[in-house]
Image 1: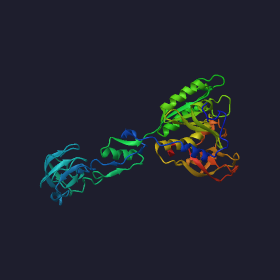
Image 2: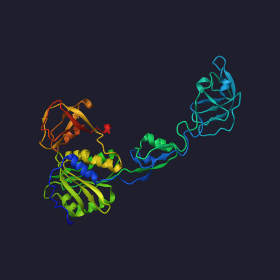
Image 3: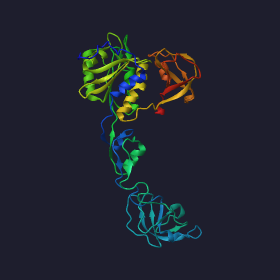
Image 4: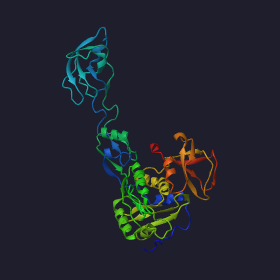
Length: 418
């Protein structure tokens, strides 16, 4: 063990509040360095440059309708009963360029998006004609259906700003003004490691004393939902040498390493033992239920941030929502805000542990954030209630009894709310 590192049985001397622990955790995290990526790959990324238009939008005058390009003066008196007849001198589809000049007595058939020919100053919609060729009957005056150069964006104009979050809408604009790639803060590459000799891959038959690795697949889904690239290791047993090798490799492969299990006070809690020699990791007791044993620090030469989560599945999920989600947002360059929190009234009375923030699995009444009802038993291993829950009620540490009708903050677990 390196000088100054804690024993693998040691925790911080005092218990931290969840907010105190989160502040300490985020202090060791920095946004990733900008990279240039194709615009098709930057959805959700934070822009790391200003984007200016290489050309105007539109870059040429074009028709907003299918119809006929005309001199407006020629068709001022055109009606259904007394149509104006014009000679059609050209057919202009989108993607072509006009070769003729529209003069008095002539017209050009034109498609939506096609360039307006020289001499034309109006468009007659095809619905107001007989659609004829090589002579067309015009049944109404021309309309103002011409998109002029630069009416949307001028050449050289600032269209997207540093710090803006890229979306389908902003990606469309970047493409339109000539950008095939932009500099952004990339989504992180996260290595997920489940530890424990009792774990087997999901789907395998269980031998005596074994359980399925729930945390690995659960965190994989949570991280991918945040657009992270996930490297999920197969289960690592409680062997210090093997775990050490996996962690050293993970430090090179990822921007963040997450482990689950092996951070309590047991003799076989290998994560604490190994991390005492590989990096600087603080193991903390956090005044929360579930999820009290936590750890964070760095490993490897980069160094790479690492967060160690408890092994019970509900503890791991709660820890993800409270701690890992803000970490990922910070790596991505987003503001670290509680976007998925709101307030709701409790539908039931229940007790809460003294001096701990409790995260209660609950169901929102009718799917609306009006009333929430606790579901199932609240043990850190109970997955049935977790599957039914769509939110976590946050009970403050100074509240030992929640009454029906009390207003509580909640974390929204519904994917559609993200």
